[in-house]
Length: 348
Image (cartoon, rainbow, N blue to C red; front, side, top):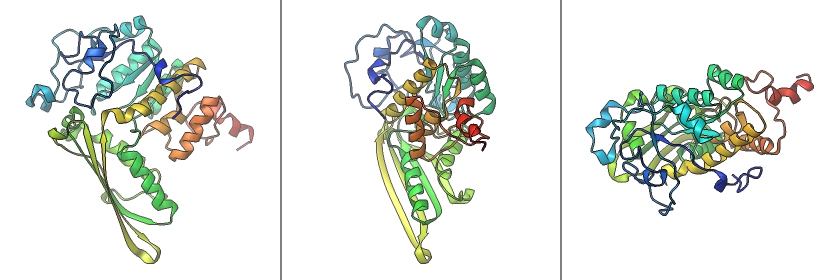
């Protein structure tokens, strides 16, 4: 979003602790662990220096789907036999200020475990996965009461399937085109797509991606007219994610219009740009002693934020937050009190 966010640059982000469950990563320095299998993304900076940060084993909980054990080790997880560490103690001893969750899709219990660990360690939480925490009023209140900021849920890629789909759906609406039906099918060959072959782990993911598109439409589509979600695992694609998107609508005179798009991206680094913005804004909230769900940066960088806003509005809200200005939001919003102050003063 910006090279500098209120003085914080990307290079100011320092890894001080790391958790994993794979025996090829646990016990290694982060600089080695990031290149260990089953990681298969392109290496855009291969000479990562030694960091002096050893990857600790976290609790497995529901982080590994049973079907993953049926695949070759280079494509799946190999669970370490070591005992899990005390995550809260590690966070406290490391001096960490923000904890980022990139658990596999469907890791509901594990994601909430780390959310509670962030609360207990009193550090910010950036929930990049489709487990509804920041957008859950109960969890939102926990973070607000603790004075701990949280950004979530389910990170948008910098230029990915969801943001492109949202933009085109908004274009249809803004140009007076009636969108009748749409689908988004995604394929990939990394462990994320292998993990998502288990349909039981996809419920929150489908809700998150579908709601992200529905929220920009004046009238949401019926369930049978919209299908969004992972489609299949293709090993040779590795970290290359391919999106097939189709939109069918009607323009003036009910004349049909169809749009088809194929998007090819390297999946893993595609959320990096969004994440470094979320981390830096979360740090700003810590500096300013702001707790609870951060509506502005959540709406801009996440698919399922506490409140959905059009992307251009969300960006303006983030700009205001960076400058320390108060955002005007609906009076009945379940967000931070200082965000509604300006509206209350107007008597609305």
